[in-house]
Image 1 (cartoon, rainbow, N blue to C red):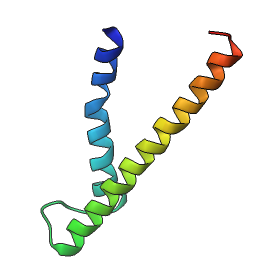
Image 2 (image 1 turned 180 degrees about the vertical axis):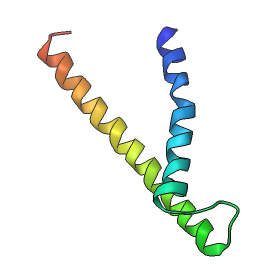
Image 3 (image 1 turned 180 degrees about the horizontal axis):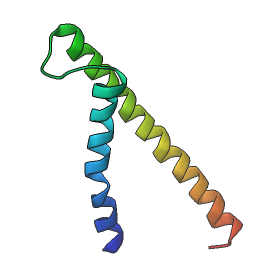
Image 4 (image 1 turned 90 degrees about the vertical axis):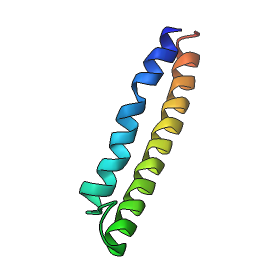
Length: 71
């Protein structure tokens, strides 16, 4: 139960992270002209892909630590 609540608390951070990539890193605007919207969409996609890689690497390292400590 506590793990589900903990995981739920990360959801707003993930949304902010992808929005931040679209706005600040790619200089996009979801309400701007066509080029700004395209830049924003690309930034959100890249941010989501980065979060995917973060999840995969965390999963891989978790399994290595479980084997290391015989848990």
